[in-house]
Image (cartoon, rainbow, N blue to C red; front, side):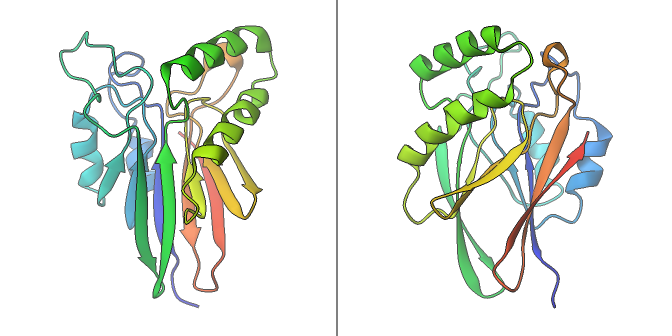
Length: 196
């Protein structure tokens, strides 16, 4: 068996509003990736230059793109993107979105979060159906963030993968996390997580 094609996946780094800089553990985890994906809420797009030093990096806009306190934002990034990779001689297709899709869903998600008190996993069950409706048919993997809650679930043959958040969510007792997708020679896609 040959080495898997490695896609490093992070989301919700919120730099500099919640973190001053990317933790070194993120760079160590992403080292060796063939591709790096950032699923939004970057805030300062200069983070992408740091990630690009590891591997080619693609990102999408998060839901806090309207924040301009630093004078730079991620608002110029696309809301979603279709990514085609070559892994072991076959094309694999990933669709990435932060998860909110529009301002109306963002407000609904924020209201839901206030009422969850310990059942944060429900936020992903709200996000996945909207992403499933928007997912391009050829996408076999859907990468998203937004909830800060890591998970992987196969629905209608597509893997929905959330790496969690680089910042975690201390108010909801969610530890900071990041993810990896391993595309194996036999066609399997293996999701993995690690604490930041």
